[in-house]
Image 1 (cartoon, rainbow, N blue to C red):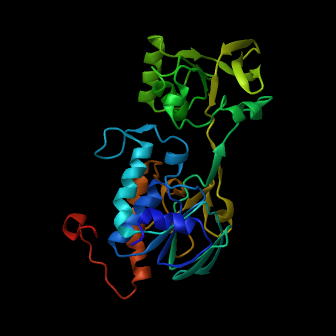
Image 2: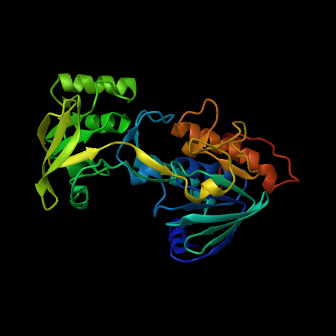
Length: 350
């Protein structure tokens, strides 16, 4: 019997045609948990993602970043969370089309056809959009010579391994959660940490911001406020200092080996934006109770979905996966009533 991982790699390596119940676009936490919820209802699905591995931003951007609001886990690193989700869905053996971008969608509820940029064809009765931020990329600072420093890793937008920054002089720019969280996480690893922000107030979680202030008071982090990035010093992609300027234009040089600019991600829904689903500020509008979009048979969960009271939390994406799965059941099994059962009594396939 071909293992799930081997099967996933096989499907990734070749053009294929799949007939299934549900096509899940996006293999981040919400998309992975949707496999579990659908599997518990005996609904077959396929995972499709533009990235070469599952996990979405958790894998691609911050696998070592701790997450504190996953139930029953006081703290769990993002990469470990994805590993646990993979273990949880392994009994359902959902095939994966990774490194694929869905380009086309045709048909209607009960009979959709999706096509990818690699020529794959997927026939499904319903579609779940779990695309997170869509195709995402960093917002880059407008600094001269930036590409050369990006190529050498002296300018990085994501931290995949904290150990890569051990003993480095790190400058962090930004005022959101990423900037604050990594300033705290790199204490005791980086040789020095300087945080550049244009104002004293941060947009991060209040508790995290308070921890950063306390770390600065202890001398663990230097706050460079109010300043903005101005330029880079070095040669051949080797960084020696980051120039920052205050509100009056006065320039100051910060000795640095690595610059981490955290100015958020640019969102691009790509072809999804042309599929006729109602959008609100670059997000897909859904009915909260079912997570169905304005197009019957197309559902959206996780960060890509929006509705009144929406919170962009992984745990809320998990809840949406469950709601969408139950709303989808009648599409797949129109003549079968769904009798709700708890997993403790139903069990999981082995």
